[in-house]
Structure formats: structure tokens, C-alpha cells
Amino acid sequence: MFNLRCAVLNSVSALRRQLVTPLNASVTLTALFQVIMLRSFQFQSCSYFPPLPGQESTLRWAGKKFEELPIVHIKATYNNTHIQLSDSAGQSLVRTSCGTEGFKNIKKSTPIAAQTAGISAAAKATAKGVTFVRVVVKGLGPGRLSAIKGLTMGGLQVVSITDNTPVPHNGCRPRKARRM
Amino acid sequence: MSRHLRFIARTVMVQDGNVDAAYKILNRVLTQDGIIDTVKRRRYFEKPCRERQRKNFENCKRIYHMEMARKIAFVSKTNREDPWLGC
Image (cartoon, rainbow over all chains, first blue to last red; front, side, top):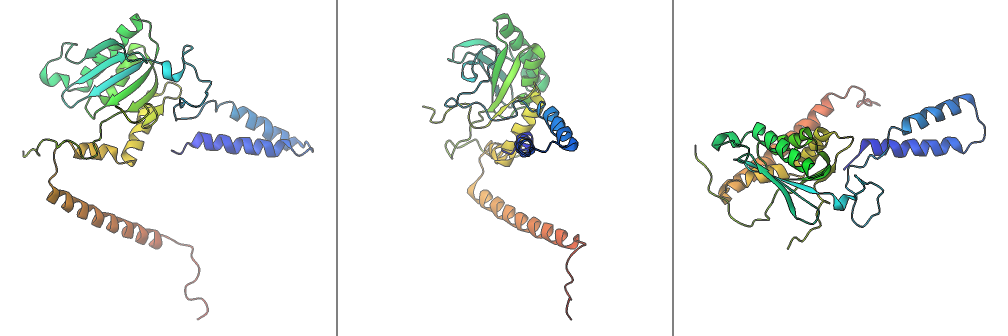
């Protein structure tokens, strides 16, 4: 995956190295160097890839490494959206869904219901002392994005988004095509 | 049971709390990898005859679009070397 900011940062650091080595300090060179130093402060951590468990990374969220953050599983089906918060070991902490929020039947399969479920899940999670969270989304339903939005609106900080939609390599046969 | 490590594939980190941008990036990556339309297609069973028809149609569509893009790129070029140079 191509990251424009990382590529620019690499080119900026290469340019910086080229500028530092010549010993003649002309006015234009130092001015350009100062501009580049100013610009380079804006690019801090520009990697969209998660920190792999083998590599040592200095990223910490509330003192926890990436592998120890709690996980929010969002199952976005076509008729409903379930949200379950579990810690990194897998112990469930909070469980909400559009149905537990009081929506019924067709109102459950709306983004607004998913957002309210996200807000209530975030409220319960902050009551248990959770701040930073990784999100795992499963399924392509109406509440896929709005559940994550609801989590951020409720006060949880989302660190990463993973997509865990099940893709069978020709496993079970799905139901027959609808003829409308 | 799960044969793959978790949180490595199909994962996007959120930069500066910008969840919308991260979700957009994730969506773009998934569509480019063909996962979104695979999931949509597998919601209902597609008979093998329909699958062959669809693959054929997509092949023809791809050939047509590539040729048309080539033609447009050629026709819209303004600066090119003189094809009749020397005669």
C-alpha cells in the first residue's frame, strides 16, 4: 500500500542528508534546510500498517502495546448490528446490539440504530475504564461505518480498524438467488 | 483453528483520530483487492452457467475499456514526433 507522506518523508530526509554534507554554507542552503526541518516536524508517525508482533515499536496507547489493547467486534449483518467489546485475551466486557437499544424489526437494520448501539457500548466501556480500542468489523451491513462513528461519539478512541469479513474459498453453498 | 495471525491483513491504523479517512482507506484497499464485490456476489448462490456468462461479459468489458482508453490517450496526444518526417 502506497503511502504518500512516508515517501515524501523519505525524500525529505534524503534531501536533508544531501544538504548537510557540503561544507559551503550559503544563505539559500541554510534557509532551505530550515524550511525542510520545519516541514519534517509535521510527519511524525505516518505508517498505516499495524505494528507487527515480531517487531519492536515504540507506539503505546495508555501505556499498552498494540497487542494488549481491547478489541471491539462489530458484526454488521444486513438485518442488525452487534457490538461486543472484549479484552486482548478474549474475555467479553460489554455487549450491545440494535435490539438491546430498543429498536425492533426493520429499525434495527439502519445506520442510526448502529450509531446508538455504538454510543451505548462506548458509555459502558468508559464506565469500565477503557479508552483506546481496536475495531474489528465483520460483514457488509448498513451499520458498518456508523457503529464505529458511534464508538468515537461515545468517547472511545479508535486506534485501528480491521476487516474480518468471512470470505469462503468455495465452502458452504449460500441460499438461492432471490427473484423479485 | 484460525490459521492466520490476527491484525495483520486488512488492517488500517487511524492517524490523528481521523476515523473517516481510515475507513475510506480500508474501503479502497478492499475494493481494489476485490473483496467487497466477492462478498456481495456470494450473498446468494450464483449458478455455474450464470458465472460463466458473467466472467465472459467482464472479459469483453475489460478489453473494450482498455482499447478505448488507449484510443483516447492516442487521440488526445498533441505533441508527437512527425510521422511523415523524411518524405
